[in-house]
Every structure is written in C-alpha cells, then in structure tokens.
Length: 146
Image 1 (tube, rainbow, N blue to C red):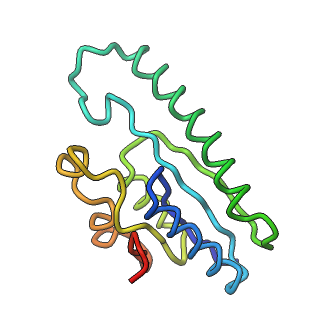
Image 2: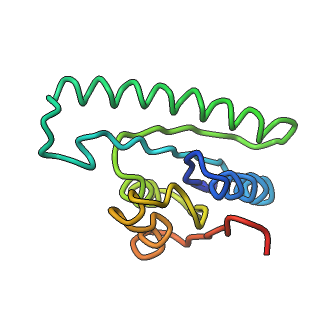
Image 3: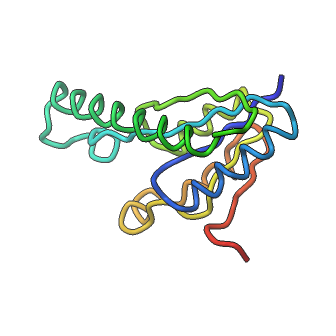
C-alpha cells in the first residue's frame, strides 16, 4: 500500500496541504502519515544554558501538545472520509524529520508557507529544504488559492 506523508504545523498552508493530501490518499487508497515535528530548544540553540533534563522535559511537553493538536486537526479534517491515518510527532527540525519520513513514502506533501519570520530566516524554508532533499516526489501546496 502506498503511503503519503504530509508535514503539518499550525499554519494555514499546512492545513491546505492536509486537505489536499487527504483527497489524494483517498484517490490512491493510500495510508496518510501526518507528521508534526516538534523542535526543542536544543534543536535551535544547542549550546544554550538550558540543561539537558530541562530541555528534554520541555520537548516532551511540546510533543504532547503537538499530539493533542494533531489529533484534533485530523479528527476534523478526516470526518466522514475513508482514509487510514498514521500520526507522528518526532522531536527535531521539521525539514530533517520530513526528509527522514520521505524514505518510506510514495509522496510528500507540504504547505508553501509555515511559521516564517525569524525562524524562517534562521532555518530556511521547510518546503525548499524537502524539495531538494526528499527521497520521493514532493507536492508543495500554496498558502492561498490562486
């Protein structure tokens, strides 16, 4: 069975990507794997003064929050649709985690705009990174209808 991976965050662009990925998974009779990567403070600032235990606790809390948000989003988005959904909330940089997930996927779907701002400048565009490094075809969904 095919697997379609969709990268999610709190952005409208990723919600549009989810809608598209659900539709595509239904057409292909594929499993949808929803991935919401949770960066820790150690991910962005590996030499910060935050201790390992404190950083790990914060990452676990963020991961639990991401799992709850993902469960709610997927319940709403897949209501009444016949699609098999897997969930993942790995701790790490979103682009790195999506590239890793792409190894076992037939298709990777992301939104064209995510958090942006300083984080976007610091890390670069997730969609640009996965397009360049993914192990499968990538579909980038624009943030708004054109």
